[in-house]
Structure formats: structure tokens, C-alpha cells
Length: 76
Image (cartoon, rainbow, N blue to C red):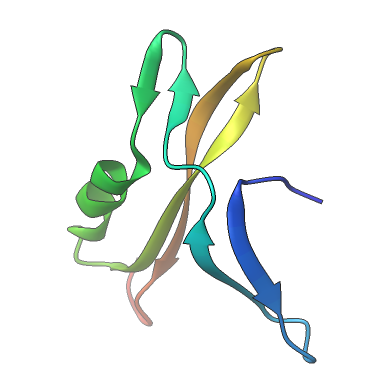
């Protein structure tokens, strides 16, 4: 299991769908980072279809941003 603080569900085929965020900020060192601006920046790449940025645990009480990216078919 991966705990991402996102809200989602899976269907009878085992496909997983993320539909909302439970937590809006990523706590990275002394900063609160909103994932939305990072997603918007990555989404501008011409090969990107979809992107989601979540908090990845880092150390005892810290997090770092991690992006899941789906590229467009036929793109690198």
C-alpha cells in the first residue's frame, strides 16, 4: 500500500482512480508546497497527458513531492 493523502477508488477490473485530494500541502523541510503549481508546470510538456503530484515520505516527519506522469501515446 502507498499512503498518498488522496481520495480514490478501484473498480471491478482493479483499475484505480484518484478523484480528489485529502491534503493540499506537502511539508518539505521548512516549506509548505502546493502540488498544483508543480502539476501545471509538468503538464506544459508536449508529451504529457496527465500528471499528479503527491507527498512521498522522506525521513521521520518530512515529505517530498513525487510526480506520477502519463505520457501521450507515441511520445517520449
